Length: 356
Image (cartoon, rainbow, N blue to C red; front, side, top):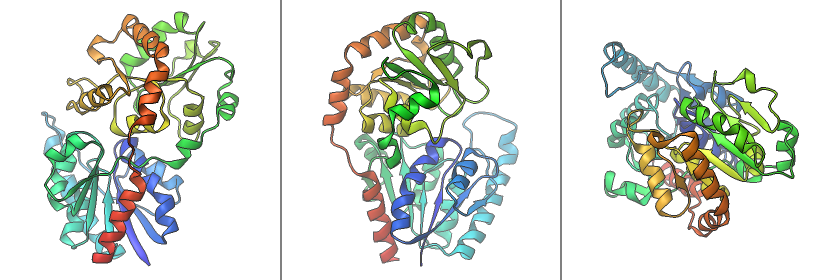
């Protein structure tokens, strides 16, 4: 029996590419296990897929002062010990890591057990967790050609991001039934990430009086960010988070406003959805979303609105501009060269397993 361990967590973006690989791995007869944290978002998402889920201790590695910086290294060490135990217990042929802090002890433990490791880096520049893990990786996959200059020569390959096949087969009719919106009016979809965004939520809601006469709005606003005062607003629906119905919502959307996480924008590219990207500011991140967004803007795929410039007025201008030029944006994405990320990564997995 061929065996693989998948790992990654902390945000949905560190989990959904792993889920995208599951159908092909199952077709090829792999016994699949998942290592994640005790309380991360990955736990619920993976358990829904029916995979064996193994929990390990996970500490966050921060670039700023926090009292937890004292205790979290001990959590990482504990997680490493737990991951080593799981390597010897599960005896995988290979490990595939999508990143996030929980993946670091898993990758290090796999190296100790001499198990090949493939890491996937979504952003243009590697995040801290992957930077720590890269020396232990056998191969590294990435989304952008610009990323290769940040990775060890000979280890890296531009694979693209694995995208769940079901995202490409959504049903607009089902979306309208689910949301109660009408199929004969255009729909704007707002995705602020699994945690939501207060600044995006505020800007969108301030525009509703002027937006709703022209567009219907589906607003994924993040956990704890529902506004009860807007619950009965005609043409506007809000959800904390969507999973199974996301493909249908994408199918229904004529225009999308999104953060610029690499997995999210790769999904928009695959679907050729006209979009406005609002990347996380440098004050709230390491700036990776800004680089991702600029790359997509340069290729003609996206309109970029910096968070520092975000207001009801600037967002209104962006919506008008993209709506008027939506066919141009869609055409650019359709004409772009896309790598079949799933088959590329599966090919690497099979190759390394056979060489082991």
